[in-house]
Length: 140
Length: 88
Image 1 (cartoon, each protein chain N blue to C red):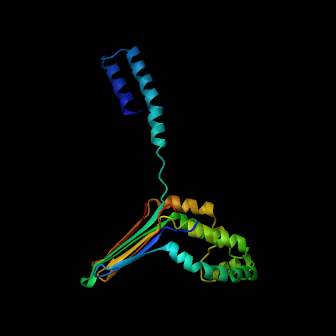
Image 2 (cartoon, each protein chain N blue to C red):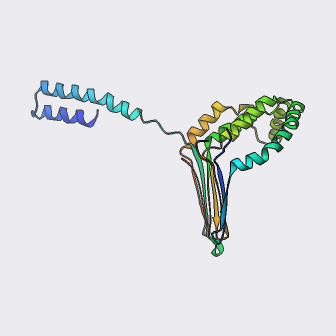
Image 3 (tube, rainbow over the protein chains, first blue to last red):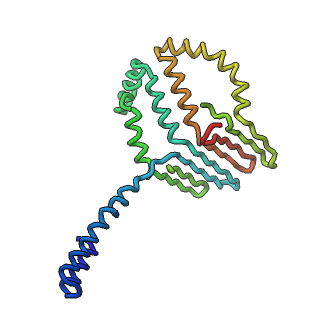
């Protein structure tokens, strides 16, 4: 039971409002709630468009900054490159990875799978701070 | 679509610098690319890759560079590579 509905019922039990008024108030509340829920649902999480890498190096009296912005679109295009790898080469790579103890299948890299990864990247932030340098990787 | 209006700016520590619009670089590279294209085509056939598909993916990668920004600066100078989001 939400807070507003509870308040209406409390007002009814305290005799501040009668049953008809309580009914009208609850009906009005229910009319507002789907709109509010839709508004909350209509706020989709934004897909990240860029990967940002910021490096700030202040060690040894020097000051160096690196600021890189790479579009996610490049990641998608890169995945399409795997489609160009011939089957026999792909099998060789998979075999070599398995021998190294990495059970990774190149055939599973597909654009649709990548979309899931990109969705999750929205919340990725990597912060590395040292006394001389600071590195920050995030998506925006 | 290749990035035509992209720029590369290089500056030294004293503030002197220059920028290179990439369309000039593309113009200079064009004859080399035209020479290399048949070789790339043959290489694709040798490794059993569809050359037209390879060309398409390569184009997609170049196109996906839109919005790339690389900025490196320190006391000795700075380098900036900027590819705008829309290619003109």
